[in-house]
Every structure is written in C-alpha cells, then in structure tokens.
Image (cartoon, rainbow, N blue to C red; front, side, top):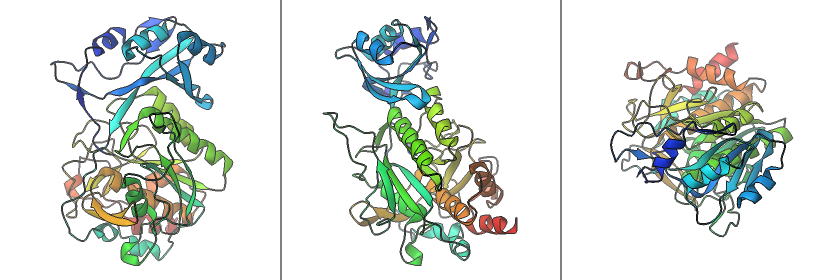
Length: 411
C-alpha cells in the first residue's frame, strides 16, 4: 500500500461538513475525517466526480429511487446491500449527496474516494532478493513450496499472465474498472506493481529468483489503473467478486493480497472486508507508505494481516506506517522482482512487504488446509523475530518463514 494522493480542499467540502451526521429521513451522511481543518491547506483525499456509494433502507426498488433522482446504478453488490451510483451530469458531489438523501429510503451515502499509489523504483542495488534470506524462505521450502489449491489473489494493478514467474498458474481474473467510455478494462497489468508483488509472494523459477510460495496459484484482480490510482468502489467490487469466487470454489484456500488505503474508516469498505472474511479469505495488506503512526484502512480493520516494511539492515523504513495496529514487518525496500512485459525491477513499499507475508501464509495453508485465517495470522506474529529496533513500533517482529513452518509441524 502506497502513499495516497492528497489535494488541498475544495470549497464544496464546506457543505459536506455542514451535512456530517445530518439525519434526513433516517439517512446519515458518513463523516470522512474532515474535522481536522485548522488551516486552509490541510490535505484531504479527493473523490470520483461522478460516483457515490449508497446503502438503502427501503423495500422500494433502489433502481426506481435512483432513476427518479436522475442518476443510475453502475454496480449493485446486493449480497452486502451496497450500490455504486452514477450521479446526474452537471452536479457537484456535495449537492448530489444532499439531494439524494432527500429522496428518502437511504440509510447512508459516501463519496467514492480516490487513493493514488506512488511506487518509485528503488535507486539502491544491494542484491534485491535479500528478502529470501531475511525471511528464511529456503529452510521453509524443505517442508513445502506451496500447493495449487492455495490461491493468492493479487488486488492491485493486475497481472501479466504471460510473465514467466506466473504463467500457467493464473486460475481466474476480474476487473471492476471502466475506461472513460465506461468500457470494461481487462485485468492485465499495465503498470507493473501487481506483477512485482505477485512474483515476490509466489513467483516460480530458480532458487535465488523464486517467490516465497512458488507452487501456489494466482488470481488477478485489477483494482488500480495504469497510474496506480484506485477508488474505494473498485476495492469493494474486487472483494465482493472474490467472496463469490470463494463460495464457488470451496476446495481453495484464498489469500487476498491487497493494496490501497485511506486515513479514515468507511462502513462501506468494512462491509466488503467482512464479506470476504466470512468466506474464509485471509486479507493481507501493507501498513501504508506515509511514515506515520496514523491508522490506515482497510489495513487497520479487525482480522486483516497488516505488514510494515523494513530495509536490508532490518530497520523500519522511513516511509512505512507503524503502530500497535500493525502485526509484523517484512522486507519492503530495494526488492528485486518481476514487472510487466516480462522484465524485472527493484521497488520499495509496504505492498512489497505484504507480499512476503502472503507467501508465507500460503506455505502454512499448503501444509495444513484446515487452518483458519486467524490461526495463520497468529502463527506469523508468534514466530516473527523479535527485534529491538521494532519494539514499541509494531505488535510483532520480522516475518520468519522457517519458524512459522516449524511451529506448524510441531503442533
């Protein structure tokens, strides 16, 4: 998960503040963290100019309500009772929220917030694959290298399905993204980072070039566009799709390797997270790349395995978020891995660190399929290497694949 895009606030936000917690026919406009506005340049996340997230509280047909309002439903996630609504043309988001609530029959609404990742190739060249040594991956491979029924769903910029690191192991794919003409965008990786973290977690190949769990499978879910931008609705759509995929494939064990985050909670996103978790999916994500102790979501939601980034010396990187809501740490700086187009590169980020943890989780599940996601999370925390450098900054220590597998074999 990378640094979200910031922008100075718009005049229209003033109306949003007035509406916060306003009850209109039982409906609530969700507060999004705009209370900390002590000066005129406090940055906030921006949102999609044409889309709103809506939860209804009526027996009336949601489509009829939205049609009467002048908009249309772009996506319906009926299993979690959420809808993505396209606003009428020529109306500001704050005005749209106010007028939509006035229609009645709506429990809560929320703008479709944007977050922009800013992955920057690492300038260092210290071997790149140092993460395999730091996490003791080779010792874990003496027990298992994965299983094809364990699936890592990469929820990022997509997957280069023809890259040698992942080819012939991608079971499925999905993209909720639409282009400017509202034509579906395929889940192919047109950026590079999705392929990069996929190969870290489970790339095949020679020993020094392997991922952590090289015999597991993949799903590609494109939640980010070619510039690594992502909207909250796209992450929600990806989680809901993956939850349904899990229902249809009960023999699989699924790890969602997510990237994306916002500084404040969203009940809409939390619903999607719980929907996936209730289907036995382990959610793994980086802690965020703002160098802050401030919580990030979905990383800070209960049950999510949250990973901070360390450098080759084992120190917390200056960009990694931290705090007693972060479970453990893993390599996240100067890491060499695949990129789209069949190439390779060095990148930094807590998304990179999360990929290592997803790979070790895949090894655990490959050896013992009846583990619960929570049990996997606890094993990884308990077997992480305690490090004085990290004391007080995160809950656990540094990810250790060998110790995790040894604990599993000893139980």
